Length: 85
Image (cartoon, rainbow, N blue to C red; front, side, top):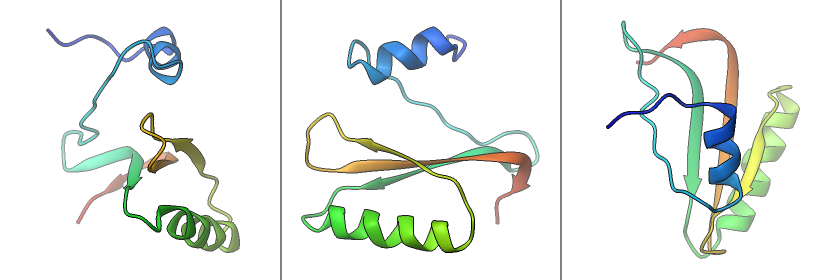
């Protein structure tokens, strides 16, 4: 059963109490956030490089360490819905 993505659900996920997944594609092939998964051995260097590029472009990001401890996710929330190509 699909549930609404609420602040409570997100908080429980971030605390490691539940696992959630989301498919951010909206009608018209648009989205309002992006999540990038970094999992390889050198994920930390990749995250730093990505973060540096986002800083240079004034793109705010949020970094979340994977529950396994062997990876990370970068979240980008968009002020406007964008078209995915």
